[in-house]
Length: 64
Image (cartoon, rainbow, N blue to C red; front, side, top):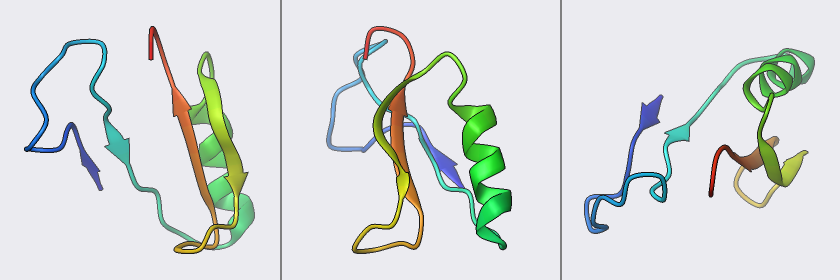
């Protein structure tokens, strides 16, 4: 699943986030996808457990 921005926020090119949700099992498969997707990105939160998910992480590309 992916979406590009929250409807209540104005479009500011280069500032608004795109969100991607990757689901699957086993966790090694998710970690492999994470490693590929985060290439050339700045990791804001490393992939790991959170209150709402077994595996969550955040990264940004560009000026973000």
